[in-house]
Length: 388
Image (tube, rainbow, N blue to C red; front, side, top):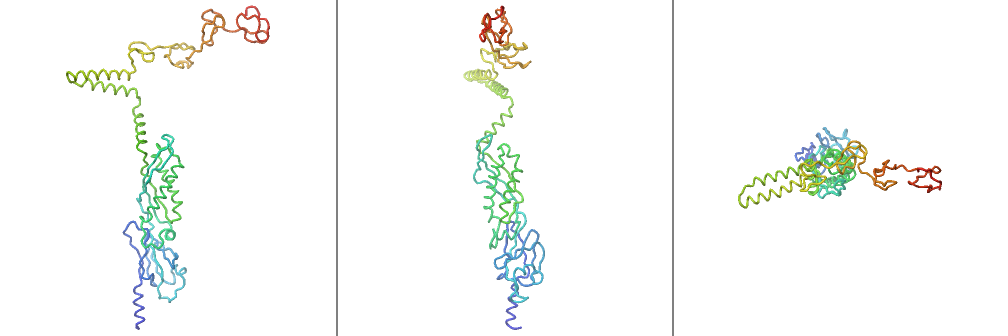
């Protein structure tokens, strides 16, 4: 064997014969396989595992993408040869190409969150500022597009290299979806799943150009400012109390019991009595019993004031606007008697003072109303008949 042949054989032995990648980093999106001088020996074995894709780049262009399986890189049956062009140095010469392994598995539990509050107009609380955080899952959907648009010639591309860009896109789409859906702040917790699905669809429209896809999107929490949360807590407390008047009575009774149990002697006894009198006054107010008593709050033992319904005569509480029995209007409009001027209920047919009828006489000619004692019609001048 000549010296030239030995040198040629030694150089060929440096070429990689098995091309494969075992990933133990859990966060690597792309890995460039180290090929000596970018030369692959003819007959080399290419092994692509599940959740991987091998991309051959020849003279700066993506030549071919290999899905999971075992391949032999040789002249007769390797698809990339049709794209790499004819070999210049014979069948046994190496192929000059870069080999990139792309991890196509799902990268789970990737975190996102709003660095600044998101402004939203709410029907209940007006303008509120929301903060949110959650997690999402990501995978490479198009390996060749991912290399062209994102990774480039990077030999080792990890999720943290694109995490900031992805988070900014997610927060933008989150804010946009929140404004479009107009979900009230009190109902946001019940809409996490629907809101997450809408945001994922919007994000994937943008990520498609990167060769990436968000497979899962989760909203873990949407929080309101402390002052809004305090207002919500107060509203919930009011709903839990039910009858506020009974709650006040219960609180006043507790205060009186505590004051009565405050045993002391001398000044302590006086202080206890003073506290008892003060709490007693609070209880009186809470129970609605003033010292003199009113129509709405009569003294103990007195019957509440009532008024008869003008329509059916049913007794109703003073101040009621409608009858509890017939539904008639309790407020009475008074009109003067047509003869003596006494105040009568509107619609009365006879005067309770003079007994005269309240139905006005009619003109025999034009049917206009005639006042009592009128001798002539004020409209047409016709003489009124006797008795009108």
